[in-house]
Image (cartoon, rainbow, N blue to C red; front, side, top):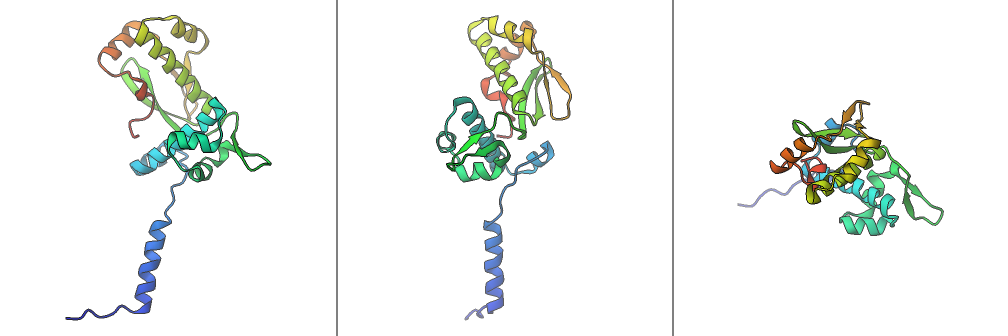
Length: 192
């Protein structure tokens, strides 16, 4: 039996729906609620965008080089992370000194790891330095870097302005490490 041929209107409508689905673009999340509403793929893409911008800032590398290292298209980075980038006269992008992009990071507390939301790259950087000092302590037993850090910075401010105290209790840190809670990969939200 021969199927009836679709009308021109039906063919155009079907093509329009396919085009709309293909053009669905992820937008930059502004809140944790928006972030967790995204698909796992979109969350990973957003995290990659923030990694590229952080790498550009820290290592003073180009957008293209940082994007290749992370494995994301530079156009996606410029589309989603535009507020954190500055376009030079020669057309190249550089990272601004700081940004207000959403980051969901893990912070060790006496109860274990907790996710915090920050919209300040400087706070994320401080937390990264804390994790670095913590990793050195856990790997070598050298407390100097962690003690030096504790004298300067004792808390991280989240997106709501709430201060979250960093954990410097060595016995508790050892307990969390032996339970397998602390690892360098733990710094980022589990949603990755």
